[in-house]
Image (cartoon, rainbow, N blue to C red):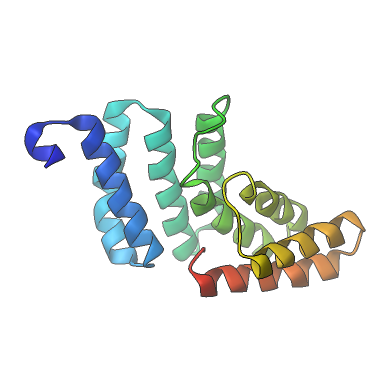
Length: 166
């Protein structure tokens, strides 16, 4: 409907919503098909929130494609887009933070992985068991217990995948 009546903001928001729904289902084929349209619409609208959402989808796809450098680069671009606007990324912030944490964990950058999961709390309330795993990782890191932090973070990421958060 938005496309038919020429309502660009609604159209961009709807496309991003469809992309997020595909991502939530872990439907990489549907997401790959939608992302170019989402990105083109977001860039034409020049609304940072939409562009950050499109880039979050790209970061998730880069994670699926085992492209860690792209995940990190996109996360940096998203952070730049979101600077100075506290509500930006409210819904899609976790979309890029889970991949960012997983990439840092896989590459041995534990401090960055813990930092990424700490930022998740800015965007969402997590189920108790997932919250407990991430809190345990954070606490272990703060108490200079990197192996325990790694184990807790690994368990948290596994749980996030199982629950459909990542």
